[in-house]
Length: 511
Image (cartoon, rainbow, N blue to C red):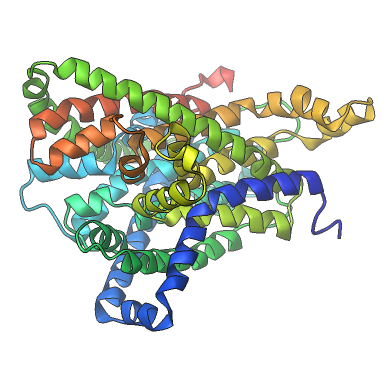
């Protein structure tokens, strides 16, 4: 009994938190049950749905594989080698997170007419998503104990054999977690595939809802998306090894010796420069071309400022609720790992693959029929953000809790302090840097979120994302440019904080 449920109070709190996040799935289950098996079979077992499912899986596979290569390679070059300008590239590799995929897609199309289809969407999603792998892997490389690599080299292994045999094993949890986030993000993305005209399940769900008014078809396809996430979650879980700790628990932190690239310095420099130019340069040039015309409209600045204020306030509400729900789940998986904790953690990921439009619709249903006082309020939208982005916060809290040695909790309890006092005075202060990084990531994703915001925002409130979408849908690209530019600028602040949190900007002697 204790093995399955070692901390009952923490488990109950985590279960309540994940139940809140699973409200959209409850909506899906109710509406799907209403459809009946015959209607579900008519929707699912068609050539079109099979083609959409294969294309969605293919896109997720291609983008995730490329992001793993690009993210791990970039992190290794900026943290472990003598690459020139590695601190600058450490920032540039993270900045694509500040650009929404629908903004990046629009920028590429406006610069290259005819740029559309599967591989166009794959390229844009790779360039926008690889920071999900780069950031955790860079943090893991900075924090990893170099002693294991030094032992391997003392036994005659060269730098690259040491990287393949030792370093990759150390960063495996971070890389797998980042790859999981990329795969789920690609499955749920609507912006890039819509702009670049690639039919996926997510786009089919949106079309069924907005153009075909087929809500039953939409929820059945959304249920198929959820089913597709299960083998992905199982694959990520299979890469973990129970009881393995890669973080340094004792001793003084010291950096690993840098690898001399020698003749590979210039090729590595050119590759990272090309990636930065593709990921950031195309969007920057496109927005700059249209920005001047956009802000010359009468009243443009006041409209943009009002939308920015709404985006920030709504995103902060989403961050507060998401981190509150993530705290017990992250603590449970770190302090009491086991089947029960794993199940609660995995359940939180199921809604992460849902399209934002499905989460928005489910909470509209919930607000009208169950919690009407919340309908069209800030907190119902915050609930939508929490359902969509809970895994991002849980991963940050879990990582921070794992890095905080539990022996300190035990020492405090042996001195007579109660569990709550220990959590307030010992555990939470040690976790604050990780919690802050998670909050920054959730704030960033809330700022960019579009479909759920369109459906759940309070009446009369427009954000940078909704204003941008409204203008681009009528081809008013100049009017949309100021909103897109300010969205990127505001999103760059939490992105910068995430980079600082990885430690790649720390001076050599400060590590």
